[in-house]
Every structure is written in C-alpha cells, then in structure tokens.
Image (cartoon, rainbow, N blue to C red; front, side):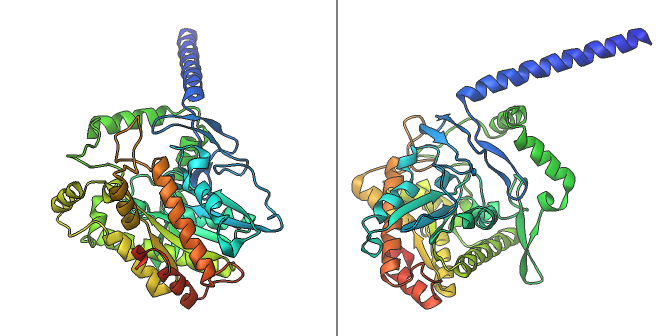
Length: 407
C-alpha cells in the first residue's frame, strides 16, 4: 500500500510539474501573442479589461482594451457637456485589431463627424464596442449591459452578413458558448445550452476565464487545420471558411430560413431598444471580400460558381427590412465595390495575409468610416437626430438620403 501511495504521489507530482511547465510556456507565448478575451456570464465571452499587446497574425497593431472591456481609451460613464457620443456595436469588423486604433472605421467616423454642420461646436466621441465572433444576439445584450451606461446619442449596429446569420442559430453555429434567441409563442426568448445548462456554462467559463492556459484552443486549431487543410484562399479559389456562401441567395433550408427570421427580429428589437432610449439608430451591412474584389470578371466567375445573379441578396434583404420597419440602413457593399473598382484597390487583406480576403485593411476602414459618417450627417440634417427617437417616417426619409445602396 505504501509503495502504491508513493507511486501515486510521484505521478501526481509529475503531472503538477508538467502542468506548471506547460502553463509557464503558454504564459510566455501569450506575452508575444497576447490573448484579449475572457468569459462573460451574459454574452459568453468579452474583451479582458486592461489587456494590451501587439497583434500581428493578420495585419499588425498595438491593441489596448479599456477598463470596461472594449477597445479604445477609457471614457467616463457620465457624458461630458457638449459631447455627441456614437456607439458602434458589432463583431471583429468593429473590433478591428488588424489595424491601428486610429485607423478603425469607428475612429474615422469620429473624425469625419467633426465636419458635419449639424454637429457644429460638438465634441465627438465614437466608441468601439465590437467583439470578435459576436452575433446579433450578443450585440443586443452588449447594448443593454454595456452601451447604455455611456448615454450614446447615436447607435450604429454593424452587421456582417458573412456569418452573423449563422452566429444567431444554435443549429448552424458551431461555437455554442454564447446566448441565442429563438421565437417562442411569437416573441424572442433566450435559449441554447449556454442559457439552459449550468455544466455547459462551467465549461465555457473554463475555456475563457483561465485564458492563459489555451491548450484547448491549440488542439482545436490543430484539428481544424487537419480537417480542412492549411490552404489559403486565392483569386482562382476565393473561399473563406469563416463565411457562409449560402447567404448570397434566398435560404432553401428551414434552418437557414429560421436563422434569417431570428436575425431580422433581433435587428428590429435593437432598433426598438435604441428608439426607447431616444437615440438615433443606423444599421450598417458590411461587405465580404469577394463583393468588393476589384475585378468584375472575378466576381462574375464567383457568381456563376454559386449560381446567383449577383452577390447583394443579403444586403438588399436588410435594406428591405429597414424600409418596412422604419429605420435607416446603409449597405456598404455596393459603394465599396465601386470605390475598389475605381481605385483598383483591395480593401481586404494585408502584407502578411492574402490580399482580397479577411478583414478590412486601413483603406477599407477609411472608406467605410467616411460612408457611415456621411450617412449619419445626412440623417441628422434630415431631422432624425438624437434629441428624440426617430419616427419611422423620419428614419425612412433619412435612409433614402444616403447612398443609393440603401434602397
């Protein structure tokens, strides 16, 4: 028995030492490849308050997370007098760790709005509430639990149609460490294992909270590479695994029809939430790389491959939702496509990644920020201002005054 207990103790000691060495190694690795995320009991995960470091896996930037867990400087909860606050909520396009903080489209909006006649004399604070991987459900919860603390005058909901539809479905989405909404008796209700299973929530907490020990992520990523291959997208094969290509045509499967229904319901609920707080609301649909690929022949080839007439079905669908329900929508894909064609410029991709794919580079952010600021300024001039909730008629009128892509 003593020998057995001694052997058991040695095994335990060896395991503890090995775990400590692994932990130390991962901590050292995280010094050079910082991890910015943590568990969040309401949203599944969020950004770690105070985290900072150099990010260089796609693009390159110095990233700082403020004390409240979103990218950018610290802001006072109380809005300073004479200040107009713009809150931008969304996913990795908004978080935008691929570019410097002052190059993000949120920062561009802040600078551009200083020239808006309707805001003369106002100080502008554009606040970045984006978190990588979020769907519309998590963005609505962010609005309710984070954004209103800062009393924004304008809320911009950035919708990435490349995967937000999937993100909002517990059937289609692979990462279930997040809350979902589903329709129950005609109303949206929280659901999913993250909501209904304490043991699953515990797993999610272990996955994100002990963020320095990322061995699970290491094995998951390794398996993903083995399963899908390590090949990168090319002009001849412009397929990105993060994007669902079924979005470019009306949904054929019930799971996708329901995912669209829930997504549209969440956008509507976000609009109603903003209106109830007497703020101005703008829904913005972001592009995918192939939509703005600066080569019409390449885009046409991709359309033929998918069997679709064009690549703007999802954008038009959200624009129609806004027209029907009385809120302004700016669809960025068409004006960005024209800009890319006119300037023979890739708006996605970096020196260390394939051009034309992934997130916006600095040029993409600059033009997207300009378009959004122009739209917001037009809305303010049309009377859909944040002094009160925009009426459906005024919001629709303001929507028509922006880019023709909003139609």
